[in-house]
Image (cartoon, rainbow, N blue to C red; front, side):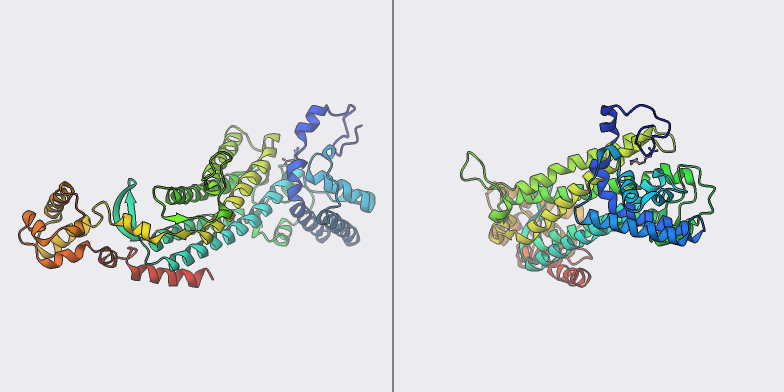
Length: 459
Ligand code: ARG
């Protein structure tokens, strides 16, 4: 017999390479807190159901609390030879309270235990992520307020399209992040069932009350099928996908800011504390944290693909293939956590160069659409006719190297003789922005209204 907890019928020690491969303690130690909660709920349920006595339950619970204290005090020694967090905790419990600890694993298996632990971990971390997203939304709303009237060019195809405000642009990310938040909170519904008591895969002959242990752990109810309870990892896929989508959105914002701080755009500047230098070019201040954020999206995608691949050919129920699930989800979570935290710093600390934004907004015939709309409203043209006339006016201005607001009424009349002098107001950027009052549009009033709304939500 080996000294392993599962060593009953083994006469030889485990090959060292296998021991190394098999040990998940190097990462699943992070489940300790949840594992102890799960064990406490389990023994309380065993006592309530009469499987163990109240006194035994009390001894085990007290022992588990001591283990928890050792872990939080940093005094617990995690041992590789004990394989994973579950056996590390049970072994230490045995040292503290003696053989009565042997009752803890009645009517359960590590399979339902680990599935329950990981659900509790996800619930906890998803709630934390939601708070972090809200921090970013709050910061974006504040920057939008400070810049609600900062005019900048809006782009399509990275070509100047129409004038907008920086405030409006920033608020678009508040909306985007809101859906990320909704996806994450929605996934909590599907995490709200407890696998505990499914035991290895078939359920158990003990008179367990799974409803009770589920409630003790804060779950809505126990999972209905013992095989599903130990085999399913779709909740991990869902979280990994939600994290991947969120990181795409972070990456797009990062990319925009990288463009905005580039020498060519120079729309905003970052403080020294959020840039890094070059070892050879003394003049450089590089937006590394944003590049980090954009780049990390790659490994976050990779984690989702790893998990999808692990599961795709795996029959139900438990296989060792599943052990990697934790490391994968921890990696994605940690990466996302640092990305979204640094993003908040960036959003809090960038300074817009309003003059640069405004001067670029004046380029590129940015009010051409407004002129076409004017012709529809004032000169009885269809939009297509108005579009053609405007295109000719743009060509006329381009040939003469003039901006639209530098054209005289007479220039315009060469293309459309019926134009009146008030058409010249159309080329004013502020007027253009003011006019976009359709719901969700960039008008100053709309943006102010939205900021007031967000300020109430993200206090
Ligand atoms: N450390 C294992 C894991 O995370 C716990 C489950 C072990 N179950 C088993 N049948 N070997 O997957």
